[in-house]
Image (tube, rainbow, N blue to C red; front, side, top):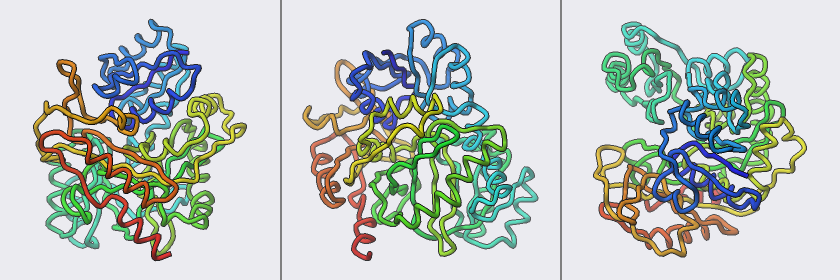
Length: 423
């Protein structure tokens, strides 16, 4: 069997490593992949947004199954094009991917169907947005409507910061067309939880919960990033909260999408805030999260391809999706300067025996060597019977990886450990 995975980051590497556990898969192609993924798959130099080239490759190379992982190709309709060419896919079609592609759509969906989320207003006119902010509660959250590489959300702690955020999105167009309309919403407080879920549009199966660490520095200081590390499961996400989320958020979201004629099949990501008024949706993603995938998939016991194909075929209810009763920790090692400017091309060294636990995100192969080629370079994941052991094992491996100007947070999982002690 030939499988194609669209994308080229740490998330895709985690998916590919998990798919490799299935012995029926003869070859995995990664489009475009990266220098590290090349050790586990055949990389093909085709951009994840080049939908026509992706379709042509799949048809010409007899691909039996495709996994479209990143947000951009999903929103652009990659699944639609592949399915039209007879290639079965894991991932939502264009109509369903709008749940991430448009913040305005997702907020209006939640409002229409009574799914708990932060109060909000939508603006297409900058002057009206600025006028609204003169009396809006502070802090507040400003979101670009469209995709913005995970950076389209600004938490404004002062009124001046809020004004600047609106101007940067709507006047300076730092996110291009994604900022032509914006959402200004209520600032919520409470523990954050990420829950990825498999769904075929009828059945929804939540995966193990996780906790992301967005800030660049220890103790949640510094700029927001795409994620500096994750742990799973999230100790704040109790069985009672999980049941409440299933009843009030997960099932209603799937039903709402069906009602809108946008049935969602794939991985639906729920970004949640556990507020004093109960769990609320911060955001939806139409795909596996990064780096949440790097701790969730290592805990999956059931064969990933089997689950994905059941999602595609609408038979997820017939599959017993099981996860290990263990914990996982992923520490991201980044390039100095990230999430701002940084240099590339530094050689990455690590012992061969830990490579199976390393997910490469931003690296290239040059003269037979692996070199840095991105902000978040790689993630190191360990699993263990308890969270502290997983954290310790992950950091022990992190110390064996080196490249010039590397940095990482030293407190991934610390907040979760405190929460466990408090329980």
